[in-house]
Image (cartoon, rainbow, N blue to C red; front, side):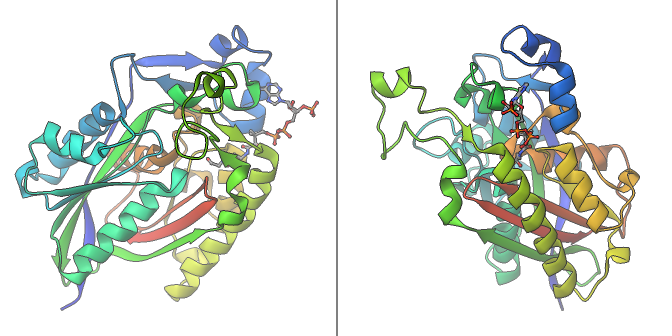
Length: 328
Ligand code: UT7
């Protein structure tokens, strides 16, 4: 009998503090009009000083476990996709394991920037179909606002904090579950979106901090063009692999970096925007948290129906990109 990976539950967490475009107008030379027209972002969340990535991740995980009707004690594996971990080491996933009391679970972090959740879904699906594990918690969580240069208007208006989680469960027979996943990377383009310092290449130093080398650098315009092209390619790859056409896709859960990029992918799929989840206006770009936050938003709103073919996609630093097709 076919073994499939089903998404048995989703959950998300957003910090309470909201930073609006009007707030940013007071901090850097920008306008609400510029931010909304170029990116679609209206506000983003900022973690409280005492909150770290594992705290956001744990909250999202609890909600996903609750929806799945699962207990933390049943988890076999926890994967946290993040580029803003609590510590250099140990892993944020281990801290989530401790917070949840999920002591049977193996745990590790995964770094594929904004594509991290798609990578985590792909790895979790492989472990389940191989027969290694039956219950897996995957999380995308970020406190990106700690790695932003708040004097750089080209990046500081874009990013936000949050976490989203999903419970993956083994199911035999049946139609629903992960149909395929598609992962890509082009390391030649790594420096188009990165934080140059703070780890082994340029270790922490007073000079490194003075130059803000531990903060996000992005060549937004270049990234924009590559993102639209690569997302179109990975959508085509996914359709071809499954022998499907655009008409067979019922719902799109895209990475939330820019409304114009989301609209381009929706257009490629001939999907009206009612069939596309958009949270970028409220969340900004939350990197690895963006897809699971958007997924949970659509699931809890009842927008994704049983039997729907749901396409998840993301693009980000690495450069990485990927997609997953899930029968709900
Ligand atoms: O999540 C991972 C992947 N990331 C992405 O997918 C992001 C992809 N890129 C983007 O979303 C867009 O490129 C941005 C939203 C980042 C920027 O939009 P854009 O239309 O590509 O603008 P631009 O970078 O070409 O900048 C246009 C102008 C520049 O001025 P000049 O040189 O034309 O005079 C910038 O200096 O806008 C200026 N600018 C701003 N003006 C007001 C840049 N940032 C701001 C700002 N407020 N915050």
